[in-house]
Image (cartoon, rainbow, N blue to C red):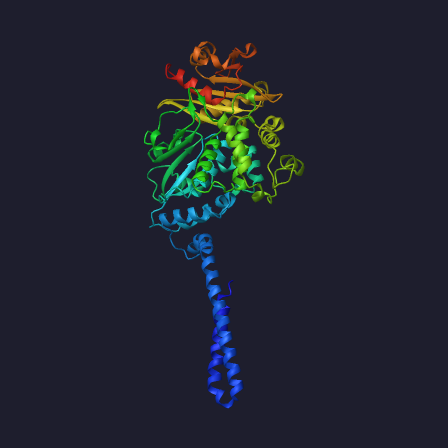
Length: 532
């Protein structure tokens, strides 16, 4: 699409004409010969200048072409892409590739291409969140993959960043906040990689170390710091941790002084409300080291901002979750994001009225953080959604297993519904017994939170088949000094609740900050002193 070919053709025609002129010039008058000679020389000069300018244009155009077609050209020629070339291409692409394109085009093209080669060694870094797969786990994995690839200050290490969604594909519809946020920024969730996709289970994170067709992989953990039990055979390939939960002291090969073990948790508390804050901080650092004036991709900025607002409850002081680091990340994202770069997306999960509240001054301008938070928390905690959801889905929508030792574990589900409404669900006890059996845990808990006048109200249910074990944990939460900060009080109306051999105890929690981040370490502490 440059004038380069036509310029050559033009020169060719001139020289053909010149050749004919030489052959016939003897028959022309002297004056005519001189005029034609001058005309030919002038045309040759003009054509030469045009050609040189064309070549210059091609030279300027070539890097753009190389950056944007290298993957697809190799794919169409069915040639294997070496891991070194893949990394260089990925880093080059980031300068011109949006967050959405990185997820929907670059990664699928790379994986499809490398899948054709059986002989070429391929190194991939799989970025994965925790098994609960909440918005923070999903978005932090996706954004960290992009930010790491975008960081031109990092030396190429022959590794391609591959973020995956840490839940089965069918469960994404239950993550309404994450789905809404990704829809807002124009990302099709169906084009993402999920933990149960074939390429993940057979190549990236094979179910056994003996898989015959394994892509060479490393693993980055986000929003947790211990690989889930189903992947225990892959413990040795964990090379990075970015998290804000209490360090469970696993994966010792990832040393704290290496800069690869980032765990924002000190003195019993998280120092950031969201893993996305840690990703944002890495992004800001990368920009400071390269071009501090560069704007942040709109889809990337809005994705990070939305989750930080969610996890910090929009920095509501009553929630006691947000930290100064979260607020600084929020302010930087609001100020440094190019909002116009995602202004043309057409969300399918959000009505125009809500979108106008979020962007009161137009899609190209800074969003209203409260309106954005309200839309996301509304999608996540919609009472109608939770009341209509089955008991089983309530228990599995935000669930994590915590390992005590090789023989025992604790399971904790988080729900956004009152305990009364949860207990009233059809076949709740049967569903809970089935869920406990399927997860094979020794103690099971449900952490409930609802919002009254924008203030969180928390409850806790503990269940198990061993009455003595359950009573021991209840006594620990009610009486032990280490648990005093939770301000636990047992609900007398539920104190003696045993059904079909399953014992339950239900508590009210006075401290609204006591989320799973605080309760899980306490339960694990007591579990280490008893026999489950």
